[in-house]
Length: 114
Length: 115
Image 1: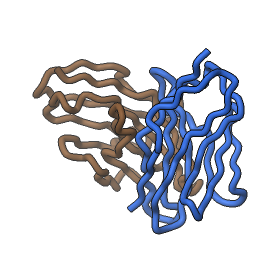
Image 2 (image 1 turned 45 degrees about the vertical axis):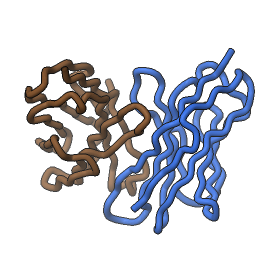
Image 3 (image 1 turned 180 degrees about the vertical axis):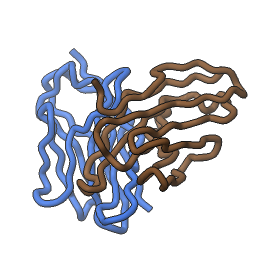
């Protein structure tokens, strides 16, 4: 089983719909992240969480919200999806006790907004 | 603020030839540097990382990278590529001190290995 699991792996939704992407991890890491990947733009940080009570905006948080339901779970919501949110979304984790020297990524969720 | 520039968006290379993927970063503080690989339809996998110590870092699949502080570069190299190395490669940087940890990625370099 994957250490960082994202669900769903693929999703097509309509403009204006609310959608939630979920991420769970079995690594015991305290820090979790959501990134968005667009062709030619690399990965950009949407939100990050240092623990259950600490959530921070990244460089492109507009139009997104997150919830850290437990140390192992971090979900990303699009309250009202729009076509330019079509992208590949990645969840990642890191361990502050290890000096955050490596981030571990899920397999990604491919989201299409039509 | 930190940033990463990957100088080539696409690099075609013949099988068994050497390859270098270039990465430059900017940061006013000490950094950790990473190279990740993304195979088609997959997530990101760590190739190698520079934290401290020797400036030549060896990673998986025969890749290596050299940290050059004076040139703020962290170029990735492989002496002989294989078809299976066809993928997108991302350079990333983060601040090495305590506190905020945010990986900043470059825009990626697509390596295409030609038979």
